[in-house]
Image (tube, rainbow, N blue to C red; front, side):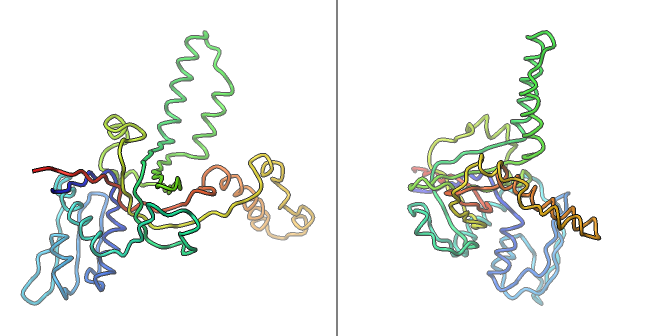
Length: 282
């Protein structure tokens, strides 16, 4: 039985960096422009990764490559790179582990298999604006201020955020923000094909970035305590306005922590590749 990987997210920059470093720095320079052209120079000690990236090697072992790949060719390259990554990168399988079994190594590479959810906050904001416009027409120009305020809040706090979440067998959520440039398709196409909660088990190769601690305070407590960290007496003695602003920004950063970061018991990750394995019968 053969296995086909349906890839929906592939962080090419991260994977190229990992493969280059784990293969003893074979690729010394790799620059990807917005036009998706590649230029690489260096000395090749082995052809393993170079062949993976499609780099021609001279008889002396030097290489230079400049090529603008089409989208389809790039996707094929990604498929080979993912296979190489899975063979090369030492990943801890956390699909069946609970939080207490993960240890305290925040930067470890892991593979998690489970139920996938995709959250597009940018699309939520656009949808809310359209709902507001429809409501405005129905109610003859009377649009809800609450809806307007909520739409503005989503736009300012979450902006163009897209996150991917995989829940493992112990119901631990591994959540990470993704770069839309590395999605294999547009969000609208993906949600049209799979829905926001695609069926079946999906796998994610990722790097843990933060394991939030269990805090006793809830959102109401945090709002009530907001501003207490600012020592107004000391601010009045400051001679630099920059230091005053920094103290205020530190306090306002708590708002971002409340709404725009991963909270306990969930685990924050940097997604590297997300895919579903499909068994193909002969």
